Amino acid sequence: MLLTIDVGNTHTVLGLFDGDDIVEHWRISTDARRTADELAVLLQGLMGMHPLLGDELGDGIDGIAICATVPSVLHELREVTRRYYGDVPAILVEPGVKTGVPILMDNPKEVGADRIINAVAAVELYGGPAIVVDFGTATTFDAVSARGEYVGGVIAPGIEISVEALGVRGAQLRKIEVARPRSVIGKNTVEAMQSGIIYGFAGQVDGVVSRVARELAADPDDVTVIATGGLAPMVLGESSVIDEHEPWLTLIGLRLVYERNVSRS
Image (cartoon, rainbow, N blue to C red):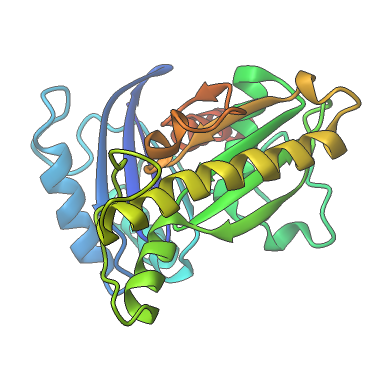
C-alpha cells in the first residue's frame, strides 16, 4: 500500500491507497516542533489500527509520497523515511521531482508543493482548463491551462484565519464556530459573524473564479472548478461556480506523482 502525507500549515492529512483507491485517511494537527521520532510514534499509532497493516511500523507499506508547506516538518519526515522506512521507496515533492505539469511562473520554485500536486490531480481527473479552489489555512485558487500547465493563481486569507482575526481585533467579538447561520441576516452577533464568513467567502470564491476563468479560457464555461480542503463543505452549497468537490485531491496527486517517479527510477 501507498502512504501519502500532505502537510499543511494547520493540519496534516494522511491517506492510505490500495492501488487507485483510498482505503483509509487521517487528519492531525501540524506541529513544527515534532521530532522524527515523535512522528514515527504517531504514524505507528494511527496505522496500527488498520486491519490491512501489520503491528510493526512499516508493515504493509510499499511506498510513501509526501508534500509539505512547512519546511521543518518536511525535514523531520525525511528523517522518518530514512530511519523507519529505509527499504520503502519514498518520494518527497520538492524541486527536481517530476510531476508532469509545467509550471509557468516567474519563479517555479516558490510555488507551494501542494498547489502543484493539486494541479496534477486536476489534470488527471478533469483535464484542463481548470481552477482548483483549496480551502485551507489560506484559500488558494490555482489555474491550469487547457494544455495541463500550471499558469498561476490567487492567494487569499483562509476561513479560519479570518475567524481568528475577527476574534482578536474586534473588541466585542470572539472566536466562533464556523457553521451556517439560520439566515443571511444574523439575529445575534454569532450568527452575524457566521453569515459574514460563510456568505462572504462564497461571494469571494464566485468573484475570483469568474475573473480567473475569463483570463484562463476564451469561453469561461469550459473551465472546470474543483473544490478541495477541509473547509470546502462549508461553502459548497453557497457558491454558484464550483463544479466538482474532491476532498482527497492532494492525496490523489501525491499518488500520481509517486507512480510517475517510481516508474522512472
